[in-house]
Length: 238
Ligand code: ADP
Ligand code: MG
Image 1 (cartoon, rainbow, N blue to C red):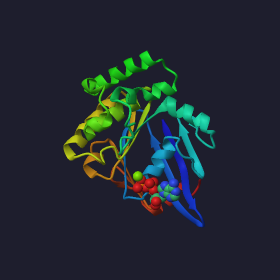
Image 2: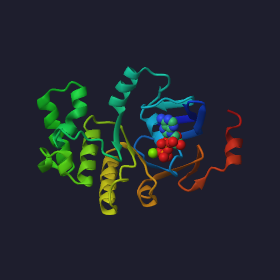
Image 3: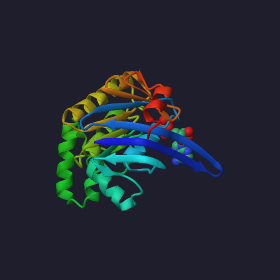
């Protein structure tokens, strides 16, 4: 589903260049439940944003479902995001002046689905999250866990193949975090590929593949170190 080859990404601000991803190689198969770990600033969000076609990269290849994602127009990127990807963020990113149902329905508005149809679909996804009774409530009236479940319903409403979640439990207490992780597991059980960025060990241990980033490289996958010399040996021919 996702193939990343020798991916490099730098940020340039003024005269400074920050090399964040320094040659990432990664394969994620359809239906995997993956976490990305690493200390703050290690490039987790950068990698996730590239996978989500929210950002471009400088070197290497990113292949999504056999499609090379490179130097793409914003219009094409938006179409592909719409088709493949649902996003969940730490801060929920709900619209405060819209109620729960309207928030969940929003992606269908951009797909020009009629009001009646998109609200019906939103109610169905709210129901799946156990939040049907909260449909007319605004985000300020909801708990963190409820807000995140609404954000997940919004991510699912376009029936994506991949859910990308950037520290989705970062603003939640432990018990609520575990509830949200149960939802991600259920989503994954439906066959949707789920990639979760986290710096919490217990959260990552609920996934089936733990990718650890360090200094711009993948340090380990499931605890198995990719030692630098071995790494260089293996890829020196490329
Ligand atoms: P993480 O999510 O692992 O904390 P990020 O991917 O957000 O790390 O950031 C990696 C590094 O790149 C950090 O040093 C951060 O300050 C820097 N960075 C992130 N986004 C930008 C940007 N848009 N412009 C400049 N620097 C950035
Ligand atoms: Mg981040």
